[in-house]
Length: 208
Image (tube, rainbow, N blue to C red; front, top):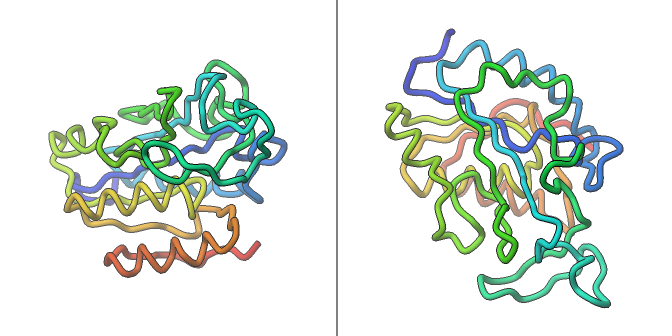
């Protein structure tokens, strides 16, 4: 361990459905696994997040008649992108990538398990008010700095980093250990928002 005990590594959604061949594959998603594994030895506090949707989740295009993936609809909590069905509870797609080290993680945070609301952030559902419990866990562990890696840079990593910063954590996003979807300019928007909030962007981003 080389990092102080007040720093945590948050590994976001490194799951089969976000890797090559998955239902919502992020280009090169599996390429980060080796880098993430190497980073784990540096941290005393390690957290995995796991997208964990019921089949009837309302963020799935299949559950809206006549709708197609990547369309935008209004939900009670705001705008919602409709996604292909992914990371369905208990399926192979929802499992962590087979090469990802998971045994040393202290906590696995499952998110998106409420059928009526999506959850990008590791800290809150997309209503920005329903907590996952991660904030309290980190505080009780004495963590004030979080290092974020995972999938995807412009969605779950972005929302997690923004929520962490807004709740007073120092945040470092390791771009070399993330990959992006980049849907209609979402990557640039994510990088701009994170920089504007004082989030440190470390490492070289891998071009698509």
